[in-house]
Image 1 (cartoon, rainbow, N blue to C red):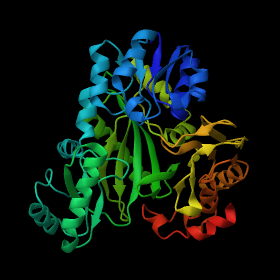
Image 2: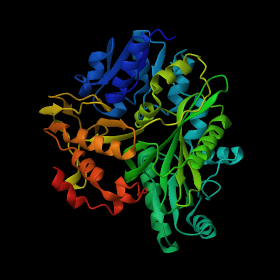
Image 3: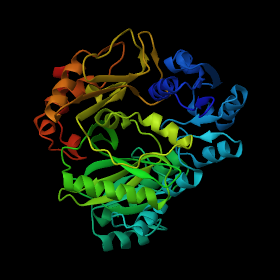
Length: 451
Protein backbone atom coordinates (compact mmCIF):
# COMPACT_ATOMS: atom_id res chain seq x y z
CA UNK A 1 0.00 0.00 0.00
CA UNK A 2 1.11 3.58 -0.61
CA UNK A 3 2.96 5.46 2.13
CA UNK A 4 1.63 8.90 1.14
CA UNK A 5 -0.76 10.16 -1.54
CA UNK A 6 -0.61 13.65 -3.01
CA UNK A 7 -3.99 14.86 -4.30
CA UNK A 8 -3.54 16.90 -7.48
CA UNK A 9 -6.91 18.59 -7.22
CA UNK A 10 -9.07 20.87 -5.10
CA UNK A 11 -12.57 21.29 -3.66
CA UNK A 12 -15.00 18.52 -2.87
CA UNK A 13 -13.19 15.78 -4.79
CA UNK A 14 -9.92 16.47 -2.91
CA UNK A 15 -11.82 16.28 0.37
CA UNK A 16 -13.58 13.10 -0.81
CA UNK A 17 -10.22 11.42 -1.52
CA UNK A 18 -8.81 12.53 1.85
CA UNK A 19 -11.70 10.85 3.67
CA UNK A 20 -11.05 7.49 2.04
CA UNK A 21 -7.30 7.78 2.58
CA UNK A 22 -7.87 8.41 6.30
CA UNK A 23 -9.97 5.24 6.48
CA UNK A 24 -7.16 3.33 4.77
CA UNK A 25 -4.57 4.86 7.10
CA UNK A 26 -2.73 6.65 4.27
CA UNK A 27 -1.37 10.18 4.95
CA UNK A 28 -2.29 12.77 2.30
CA UNK A 29 -0.78 15.91 0.81
CA UNK A 30 -3.07 18.70 -0.36
CA UNK A 31 -1.90 21.11 -3.02
CA UNK A 32 -3.58 24.48 -3.25
CA UNK A 33 -3.53 27.82 -5.03
CA UNK A 34 -3.40 31.10 -3.16
CA UNK A 35 -7.17 31.42 -3.74
CA UNK A 36 -7.76 28.09 -1.96
CA UNK A 37 -5.63 28.55 1.16
CA UNK A 38 -8.76 28.44 3.37
CA UNK A 39 -10.35 25.44 1.64
CA UNK A 40 -11.23 22.39 3.76
CA UNK A 41 -9.01 20.01 1.78
CA UNK A 42 -6.03 22.08 2.92
CA UNK A 43 -7.15 21.82 6.54
CA UNK A 44 -7.85 18.07 6.61
CA UNK A 45 -4.83 16.74 4.73
CA UNK A 46 -1.77 15.84 6.84
CA UNK A 47 0.38 18.17 4.73
CA UNK A 48 -0.35 21.04 2.35
CA UNK A 49 1.77 22.76 -0.30
CA UNK A 50 0.96 25.99 -2.13
CA UNK A 51 1.64 25.44 -5.85
CA UNK A 52 0.89 28.86 -7.30
CA UNK A 53 -1.51 31.76 -7.78
CA UNK A 54 -5.26 31.52 -8.40
CA UNK A 55 -5.11 30.84 -12.14
CA UNK A 56 -5.45 27.11 -12.89
CA UNK A 57 -2.69 27.30 -15.49
CA UNK A 58 -0.28 28.52 -12.83
CA UNK A 59 -1.40 26.10 -10.12
CA UNK A 60 -3.59 23.02 -10.62
CA UNK A 61 -2.44 22.60 -14.23
CA UNK A 62 1.19 23.41 -13.45
CA UNK A 63 2.87 20.00 -13.68
CA UNK A 64 6.37 21.16 -12.57
CA UNK A 65 4.89 22.74 -9.41
CA UNK A 66 2.89 19.61 -8.60
CA UNK A 67 5.90 17.34 -9.15
CA UNK A 68 7.98 19.62 -6.92
CA UNK A 69 5.32 19.17 -4.20
CA UNK A 70 5.54 15.39 -4.69
CA UNK A 71 9.30 15.52 -4.24
CA UNK A 72 9.45 17.73 -1.14
CA UNK A 73 6.75 15.72 0.67
CA UNK A 74 8.09 12.28 -0.38
CA UNK A 75 4.70 11.19 -1.68
CA UNK A 76 4.81 7.89 -3.59
CA UNK A 77 1.44 8.22 -5.37
CA UNK A 78 -0.69 10.93 -6.95
CA UNK A 79 -4.48 10.92 -7.13
CA UNK A 80 -5.68 13.33 -9.85
CA UNK A 81 -9.40 13.35 -8.94
CA UNK A 82 -11.49 14.59 -11.90
CA UNK A 83 -10.87 17.53 -14.21
CA UNK A 84 -7.53 19.37 -14.34
CA UNK A 85 -4.85 16.70 -15.00
CA UNK A 86 -7.00 13.59 -14.43
CA UNK A 87 -6.92 12.55 -18.10
CA UNK A 88 -3.58 14.08 -19.01
CA UNK A 89 -1.40 11.28 -20.41
CA UNK A 90 1.76 13.42 -20.21
CA UNK A 91 1.24 13.97 -16.47
CA UNK A 92 0.68 10.23 -15.92
CA UNK A 93 3.83 9.53 -17.93
CA UNK A 94 5.93 11.99 -15.91
CA UNK A 95 4.71 10.39 -12.68
CA UNK A 96 5.75 6.99 -14.02
CA UNK A 97 9.20 8.25 -15.07
CA UNK A 98 9.84 9.49 -11.53
CA UNK A 99 8.61 6.27 -9.90
CA UNK A 100 5.39 7.85 -8.63
CA UNK A 101 2.19 5.81 -8.98
CA UNK A 102 -0.52 7.66 -10.90
CA UNK A 103 -3.80 6.45 -9.39
CA UNK A 104 -5.63 5.80 -12.62
CA UNK A 105 -5.03 4.03 -15.91
CA UNK A 106 -1.70 3.94 -17.76
CA UNK A 107 -0.67 6.79 -20.09
CA UNK A 108 -1.31 4.50 -23.07
CA UNK A 109 -4.91 3.85 -21.96
CA UNK A 110 -5.54 7.56 -21.41
CA UNK A 111 -4.20 8.33 -24.90
CA UNK A 112 -6.28 5.63 -26.57
CA UNK A 113 -9.52 6.89 -25.05
CA UNK A 114 -8.62 10.60 -24.87
CA UNK A 115 -8.66 11.09 -28.62
CA UNK A 116 -12.22 10.46 -29.75
CA UNK A 117 -11.28 9.28 -33.25
CA UNK A 118 -8.84 6.69 -31.85
CA UNK A 119 -11.42 5.66 -29.24
CA UNK A 120 -14.08 5.17 -31.91
CA UNK A 121 -11.76 3.04 -34.05
CA UNK A 122 -10.88 0.94 -30.99
CA UNK A 123 -14.57 0.37 -30.21
CA UNK A 124 -15.36 -0.65 -33.80
CA UNK A 125 -12.61 -3.29 -33.60
CA UNK A 126 -13.99 -4.45 -30.24
CA UNK A 127 -17.50 -4.85 -31.65
CA UNK A 128 -19.06 -2.08 -29.55
CA UNK A 129 -21.81 -0.15 -31.41
CA UNK A 130 -20.71 3.34 -32.47
CA UNK A 131 -22.56 6.29 -33.98
CA UNK A 132 -22.18 6.47 -37.80
CA UNK A 133 -19.79 9.25 -38.72
CA UNK A 134 -16.60 10.33 -40.49
CA UNK A 135 -13.78 7.81 -40.59
CA UNK A 136 -11.35 10.38 -39.24
CA UNK A 137 -10.90 14.12 -38.91
CA UNK A 138 -12.54 16.35 -41.51
CA UNK A 139 -9.72 17.77 -43.64
CA UNK A 140 -11.81 20.45 -45.36
CA UNK A 141 -15.38 21.73 -45.62
CA UNK A 142 -16.19 20.06 -48.96
CA UNK A 143 -15.11 16.65 -47.65
CA UNK A 144 -17.23 17.27 -44.56
CA UNK A 145 -20.28 18.15 -46.65
CA UNK A 146 -19.92 14.95 -48.69
CA UNK A 147 -19.66 12.82 -45.55
CA UNK A 148 -22.65 14.58 -43.97
CA UNK A 149 -24.75 14.01 -47.09
CA UNK A 150 -23.80 10.32 -47.14
CA UNK A 151 -24.71 9.85 -43.45
CA UNK A 152 -27.79 12.06 -43.65
CA UNK A 153 -28.69 15.21 -41.74
CA UNK A 154 -28.92 16.17 -38.93
CA UNK A 155 -25.27 15.66 -37.98
CA UNK A 156 -23.12 16.73 -35.04
CA UNK A 157 -19.69 18.34 -35.44
CA UNK A 158 -17.35 17.46 -32.56
CA UNK A 159 -13.85 18.47 -31.47
CA UNK A 160 -11.61 15.39 -31.29
CA UNK A 161 -9.99 16.74 -28.11
CA UNK A 162 -13.35 17.95 -26.79
CA UNK A 163 -15.17 17.87 -23.51
CA UNK A 164 -17.78 19.90 -21.64
CA UNK A 165 -19.68 20.68 -24.84
CA UNK A 166 -16.84 22.74 -26.34
CA UNK A 167 -16.31 22.52 -30.11
CA UNK A 168 -19.72 20.93 -30.74
CA UNK A 169 -22.34 22.08 -33.26
CA UNK A 170 -25.57 20.54 -34.58
CA UNK A 171 -26.02 20.97 -38.34
CA UNK A 172 -29.50 20.28 -39.72
CA UNK A 173 -28.95 21.18 -43.38
CA UNK A 174 -26.07 21.63 -45.81
CA UNK A 175 -26.38 25.43 -45.96
CA UNK A 176 -25.47 25.61 -42.25
CA UNK A 177 -22.39 23.37 -42.53
CA UNK A 178 -19.62 25.84 -43.40
CA UNK A 179 -20.40 28.39 -40.68
CA UNK A 180 -20.95 25.67 -38.05
CA UNK A 181 -17.65 23.97 -38.96
CA UNK A 182 -15.68 27.23 -38.73
CA UNK A 183 -17.24 28.11 -35.36
CA UNK A 184 -16.65 24.63 -33.93
CA UNK A 185 -13.03 24.69 -35.07
CA UNK A 186 -12.38 28.15 -33.60
CA UNK A 187 -13.87 27.07 -30.25
CA UNK A 188 -11.84 23.82 -30.29
CA UNK A 189 -8.59 25.71 -30.89
CA UNK A 190 -9.40 28.21 -28.13
CA UNK A 191 -10.41 25.50 -25.64
CA UNK A 192 -7.97 22.66 -26.39
CA UNK A 193 -5.28 24.10 -28.72
CA UNK A 194 -6.44 21.41 -31.15
CA UNK A 195 -8.71 22.27 -34.08
CA UNK A 196 -9.40 18.67 -35.14
CA UNK A 197 -13.10 18.17 -35.98
CA UNK A 198 -15.03 15.02 -36.88
CA UNK A 199 -18.72 14.45 -37.48
CA UNK A 200 -21.34 11.96 -36.37
CA UNK A 201 -24.97 11.26 -37.07
CA UNK A 202 -27.04 13.34 -34.64
CA UNK A 203 -29.19 11.01 -32.53
CA UNK A 204 -32.58 12.62 -31.86
CA UNK A 205 -34.38 12.20 -28.52
CA UNK A 206 -31.30 10.57 -26.96
CA UNK A 207 -30.69 9.55 -23.37
CA UNK A 208 -27.18 9.96 -21.98
CA UNK A 209 -26.51 6.68 -20.19
CA UNK A 210 -23.13 5.79 -18.76
CA UNK A 211 -21.83 2.57 -17.23
CA UNK A 212 -19.41 2.54 -14.30
CA UNK A 213 -16.66 -0.02 -14.77
CA UNK A 214 -13.55 -1.21 -12.94
CA UNK A 215 -10.59 -3.24 -14.15
CA UNK A 216 -7.49 -4.47 -12.35
CA UNK A 217 -3.91 -5.24 -13.40
CA UNK A 218 -4.74 -8.92 -13.91
CA UNK A 219 -7.39 -8.65 -16.63
CA UNK A 220 -10.45 -8.78 -14.36
CA UNK A 221 -13.21 -6.35 -15.35
CA UNK A 222 -16.68 -5.67 -13.94
CA UNK A 223 -19.46 -3.15 -14.37
CA UNK A 224 -21.39 -1.42 -11.61
CA UNK A 225 -24.63 -0.70 -13.44
CA UNK A 226 -25.65 2.48 -15.26
CA UNK A 227 -26.31 6.12 -14.51
CA UNK A 228 -28.75 8.38 -16.34
CA UNK A 229 -27.16 11.79 -16.99
CA UNK A 230 -29.72 13.11 -19.48
CA UNK A 231 -30.69 16.27 -17.56
CA UNK A 232 -28.13 18.62 -19.04
CA UNK A 233 -27.75 22.26 -19.93
CA UNK A 234 -25.36 23.09 -22.78
CA UNK A 235 -23.91 19.57 -22.51
CA UNK A 236 -23.17 20.07 -18.79
CA UNK A 237 -24.75 17.52 -16.46
CA UNK A 238 -26.98 18.91 -13.71
CA UNK A 239 -28.72 15.80 -12.31
CA UNK A 240 -27.68 12.15 -12.35
CA UNK A 241 -29.46 9.05 -11.13
CA UNK A 242 -29.00 5.32 -10.77
CA UNK A 243 -30.66 3.24 -12.03
CA UNK A 244 -31.98 4.98 -15.15
CA UNK A 245 -35.79 5.14 -15.32
CA UNK A 246 -35.45 4.33 -19.04
CA UNK A 247 -33.26 1.23 -18.81
CA UNK A 248 -34.90 -2.16 -18.35
CA UNK A 249 -33.19 -5.39 -17.31
CA UNK A 250 -32.51 -6.48 -20.89
CA UNK A 251 -30.95 -3.15 -21.90
CA UNK A 252 -28.94 -3.01 -18.65
CA UNK A 253 -27.31 -6.33 -19.50
CA UNK A 254 -26.53 -5.20 -23.06
CA UNK A 255 -25.01 -1.92 -21.86
CA UNK A 256 -23.00 -3.67 -19.15
CA UNK A 257 -21.67 -6.26 -21.59
CA UNK A 258 -20.71 -3.54 -24.09
CA UNK A 259 -18.94 -1.51 -21.39
CA UNK A 260 -16.93 -4.54 -20.28
CA UNK A 261 -16.04 -5.28 -23.90
CA UNK A 262 -14.86 -1.66 -24.28
CA UNK A 263 -12.70 -1.88 -21.14
CA UNK A 264 -11.21 -5.23 -22.11
CA UNK A 265 -10.29 -3.92 -25.57
CA UNK A 266 -7.61 -1.73 -23.97
CA UNK A 267 -6.89 -3.96 -20.92
CA UNK A 268 -8.30 -1.18 -18.76
CA UNK A 269 -6.94 -0.73 -15.26
CA UNK A 270 -8.65 1.50 -12.62
CA UNK A 271 -12.23 2.72 -12.34
CA UNK A 272 -13.74 4.49 -15.32
CA UNK A 273 -16.93 5.19 -17.19
CA UNK A 274 -18.14 4.14 -20.63
CA UNK A 275 -20.69 6.63 -21.97
CA UNK A 276 -23.46 5.82 -24.44
CA UNK A 277 -26.20 7.64 -26.31
CA UNK A 278 -29.41 5.60 -26.27
CA UNK A 279 -32.21 6.45 -28.70
CA UNK A 280 -35.93 6.18 -28.04
CA UNK A 281 -35.96 2.66 -29.52
CA UNK A 282 -33.27 1.60 -26.99
CA UNK A 283 -30.54 1.32 -29.62
CA UNK A 284 -27.28 2.44 -28.01
CA UNK A 285 -24.02 3.84 -29.33
CA UNK A 286 -20.61 4.35 -27.74
CA UNK A 287 -19.91 8.02 -27.13
CA UNK A 288 -16.69 8.16 -25.12
CA UNK A 289 -14.81 6.63 -22.23
CA UNK A 290 -13.78 8.69 -19.21
CA UNK A 291 -10.57 7.27 -17.79
CA UNK A 292 -11.05 8.77 -14.30
CA UNK A 293 -13.43 8.98 -11.39
CA UNK A 294 -16.46 11.13 -12.23
CA UNK A 295 -18.40 13.78 -10.35
CA UNK A 296 -21.43 11.50 -10.27
CA UNK A 297 -19.66 8.38 -8.97
CA UNK A 298 -21.52 9.03 -5.71
CA UNK A 299 -24.91 7.83 -7.00
CA UNK A 300 -23.37 4.49 -7.91
CA UNK A 301 -21.75 4.23 -4.47
CA UNK A 302 -25.12 4.76 -2.80
CA UNK A 303 -26.95 1.98 -4.67
CA UNK A 304 -24.24 -0.70 -4.53
CA UNK A 305 -22.68 0.28 -1.15
CA UNK A 306 -19.11 0.46 -2.41
CA UNK A 307 -16.44 3.16 -2.00
CA UNK A 308 -15.20 3.73 -5.57
CA UNK A 309 -12.25 5.90 -4.49
CA UNK A 310 -11.13 3.04 -2.26
CA UNK A 311 -11.48 0.61 -5.19
CA UNK A 312 -9.40 2.96 -7.32
CA UNK A 313 -6.61 3.13 -4.73
CA UNK A 314 -6.61 -0.64 -4.11
CA UNK A 315 -6.42 -1.37 -7.84
CA UNK A 316 -3.51 1.07 -8.20
CA UNK A 317 -1.78 -0.71 -5.31
CA UNK A 318 -2.00 -3.99 -7.21
CA UNK A 319 -4.98 -5.66 -5.56
CA UNK A 320 -7.40 -7.84 -7.51
CA UNK A 321 -11.09 -7.06 -7.92
CA UNK A 322 -13.70 -9.77 -7.56
CA UNK A 323 -14.79 -9.43 -11.19
CA UNK A 324 -18.48 -9.70 -10.24
CA UNK A 325 -20.95 -7.24 -11.72
CA UNK A 326 -23.03 -5.04 -9.43
CA UNK A 327 -26.74 -4.26 -9.82
CA UNK A 328 -28.51 -1.37 -8.07
CA UNK A 329 -30.22 -2.30 -4.82
CA UNK A 330 -31.90 1.10 -4.29
CA UNK A 331 -32.48 4.33 -6.22
CA UNK A 332 -30.15 7.33 -5.90
CA UNK A 333 -30.30 10.84 -7.33
CA UNK A 334 -27.62 13.55 -7.31
CA UNK A 335 -28.19 17.28 -7.78
CA UNK A 336 -25.16 19.43 -8.53
CA UNK A 337 -25.36 22.70 -6.60
CA UNK A 338 -23.58 25.39 -8.59
CA UNK A 339 -22.83 29.01 -7.71
CA UNK A 340 -25.03 30.24 -10.55
CA UNK A 341 -28.28 32.20 -10.72
CA UNK A 342 -30.89 30.08 -12.55
CA UNK A 343 -33.26 33.08 -12.76
CA UNK A 344 -30.61 34.94 -14.81
CA UNK A 345 -29.70 32.30 -17.37
CA UNK A 346 -27.40 30.54 -14.89
CA UNK A 347 -25.09 33.54 -14.59
CA UNK A 348 -22.04 32.75 -12.38
CA UNK A 349 -22.37 34.00 -8.80
CA UNK A 350 -18.99 34.08 -7.07
CA UNK A 351 -18.76 35.72 -3.65
CA UNK A 352 -18.58 35.08 0.06
CA UNK A 353 -20.97 32.64 1.78
CA UNK A 354 -22.50 34.45 4.75
CA UNK A 355 -24.67 31.59 6.07
CA UNK A 356 -24.70 27.86 5.38
CA UNK A 357 -26.88 24.97 6.48
CA UNK A 358 -26.61 21.72 4.55
CA UNK A 359 -29.19 18.96 4.26
CA UNK A 360 -29.29 16.21 6.86
CA UNK A 361 -31.31 13.07 7.57
CA UNK A 362 -31.63 9.42 6.66
CA UNK A 363 -30.49 8.62 3.13
CA UNK A 364 -29.10 12.11 2.49
CA UNK A 365 -25.45 12.76 1.63
CA UNK A 366 -23.81 16.13 0.92
CA UNK A 367 -20.32 16.22 -0.61
CA UNK A 368 -18.92 19.74 -0.40
CA UNK A 369 -15.87 21.79 0.51
CA UNK A 370 -17.68 25.01 1.48
CA UNK A 371 -18.20 26.57 4.90
CA UNK A 372 -19.82 29.74 6.22
CA UNK A 373 -17.45 32.59 5.39
CA UNK A 374 -15.93 30.69 2.46
CA UNK A 375 -15.15 32.76 -0.65
CA UNK A 376 -16.38 31.22 -3.91
CA UNK A 377 -13.69 32.08 -6.44
CA UNK A 378 -14.44 33.02 -10.07
CA UNK A 379 -11.33 31.09 -11.16
CA UNK A 380 -12.72 27.54 -10.94
CA UNK A 381 -15.72 25.40 -11.76
CA UNK A 382 -18.92 26.77 -10.23
CA UNK A 383 -19.97 23.55 -8.45
CA UNK A 384 -20.01 24.09 -4.68
CA UNK A 385 -21.81 20.96 -3.47
CA UNK A 386 -23.49 17.71 -4.47
CA UNK A 387 -26.66 16.55 -2.76
CA UNK A 388 -27.18 12.79 -3.09
CA UNK A 389 -30.19 10.91 -1.78
CA UNK A 390 -31.10 7.23 -1.80
CA UNK A 391 -34.44 5.51 -1.29
CA UNK A 392 -36.22 2.28 -2.15
CA UNK A 393 -37.95 3.71 -5.22
CA UNK A 394 -37.41 6.56 -7.68
CA UNK A 395 -40.44 8.54 -6.51
CA UNK A 396 -39.34 8.16 -2.89
CA UNK A 397 -35.89 9.41 -3.89
CA UNK A 398 -37.39 12.43 -5.68
CA UNK A 399 -39.52 13.29 -2.65
CA UNK A 400 -36.51 12.88 -0.37
CA UNK A 401 -34.48 15.18 -2.63
CA UNK A 402 -37.27 17.78 -2.45
CA UNK A 403 -37.09 17.71 1.34
CA UNK A 404 -33.28 17.83 1.32
CA UNK A 405 -33.21 20.84 -1.00
CA UNK A 406 -35.75 22.68 1.12
CA UNK A 407 -33.39 22.60 4.11
CA UNK A 408 -30.22 23.46 2.17
CA UNK A 409 -29.54 27.15 2.80
CA UNK A 410 -26.68 29.11 1.24
CA UNK A 411 -26.72 32.87 1.71
CA UNK A 412 -24.38 35.43 0.15
CA UNK A 413 -24.39 33.86 -3.32
CA UNK A 414 -27.03 32.63 -5.78
CA UNK A 415 -27.17 28.88 -6.40
CA UNK A 416 -29.01 26.39 -8.60
CA UNK A 417 -31.05 25.07 -5.65
CA UNK A 418 -34.29 26.79 -6.88
CA UNK A 419 -33.89 25.11 -10.28
CA UNK A 420 -33.51 21.69 -8.67
CA UNK A 421 -36.57 22.28 -6.49
CA UNK A 422 -38.62 23.14 -9.59
CA UNK A 423 -37.26 20.08 -11.40
CA UNK A 424 -38.29 17.72 -8.59
CA UNK A 425 -41.88 18.99 -8.99
CA UNK A 426 -41.90 18.75 -12.78
CA UNK A 427 -44.40 16.08 -13.91
CA UNK A 428 -42.31 14.93 -16.89
CA UNK A 429 -39.19 14.52 -14.76
CA UNK A 430 -41.15 12.66 -12.09
CA UNK A 431 -42.52 10.35 -14.78
CA UNK A 432 -39.02 9.71 -16.14
CA UNK A 433 -40.08 11.22 -19.47
CA UNK A 434 -37.02 13.22 -20.55
CA UNK A 435 -33.97 13.14 -22.79
CA UNK A 436 -30.87 15.30 -23.26
CA UNK A 437 -32.99 18.06 -24.85
CA UNK A 438 -35.37 18.19 -21.89
CA UNK A 439 -34.22 21.57 -20.59
CA UNK A 440 -34.63 23.20 -24.01
CA UNK A 441 -38.39 23.18 -23.42
CA UNK A 442 -38.32 23.47 -19.62
CA UNK A 443 -40.28 26.42 -18.22
CA UNK A 444 -37.54 28.31 -16.38
CA UNK A 445 -39.94 31.11 -15.43
CA UNK A 446 -41.43 28.89 -12.70
CA UNK A 447 -38.07 28.81 -10.87
CA UNK A 448 -38.90 32.18 -9.29
CA UNK A 449 -41.59 30.40 -7.27
CA UNK A 450 -38.87 28.33 -5.57
CA UNK A 451 -36.39 31.09 -4.68
